[in-house]
Image (cartoon, rainbow, N blue to C red; front, side, top):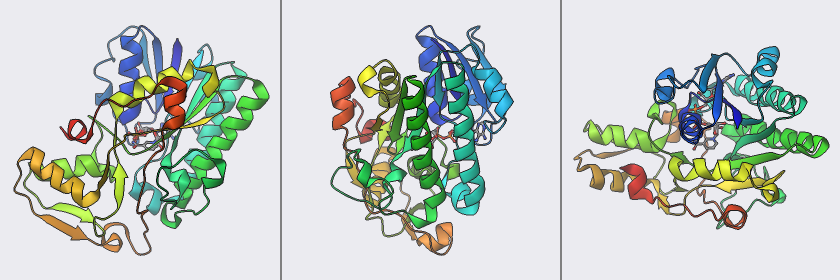
Length: 311
Ligand code: NAD
């Protein structure tokens, strides 16, 4: 594979690079290092099959130059993190929508198959028992405070779908649900690294809201091979596929688990959403993937549970 990974210096992208290089592929990363960092790429930086191009997915001609000659594009670059999105809704909408258009257009014009990273956020406030990929669930009830992110990702899916259908070039859309692992930082609001760092530093663990909101965390080490397998699975082409963990936990339950596993004596401190993110911020109560489709397509069966993910 001659792969391009946009956002490859980020958390998920850098693990994908490690995996691809370890499996003998050539990898070029396009990343503007806005939330990612070169240190995430230490494992692959010296490999002769690896190259990092610093630049933006908003630079149309750069995107085209980087993708020319590749056969596979994994598009993970995006403006992410609750603060980025809530503080700069239009800027993140612009990056996530136009950046994806540039990447998908270049992939199609150079004949490269492509994967677009989407998110559980496209399900809005829907807190059904297990979220299936049915189109009628998507953006049925938008989450106002993160609307720009959810809307851009929903439109990204549509862009990928249309270009995939019209060109006949294989395309896969992955909907990630709360993926966690090494190199994810708490800086942009990600809850697991934030809780672990607070526990290890004996600082109060800050639970936003009442802590009753429920999530299902997935390990990046389960996700990466699944993403690569989906690219090799024709039945997955032009489909959106949920990928995530299977163990549901409340955020208060997560804080308790982090305290137990780190042996920390930190207190739990409750912070209102308004204090954490500003007035009017909303969060969804439940976020649980139905991974039946991934199971059917690629025998997706995550191996790591919440304790593995935290430790
Ligand atoms: P991340 O912030 O670690 O990675 C995003 C990368 O994109 C960073 O390296 C950043 O520098 C880069 N980037 C941002 N804007 C760019 C631009 N204009 N041009 C080039 N590069 C740019 O976040 P992540 O968690 O690794 O997320 C990767 C992808 O997965 C994103 O598309 C995100 O929306 C999606 N996703 C992640 C999760 C999760 O749980 N981590 C959940 C749902 C969806």
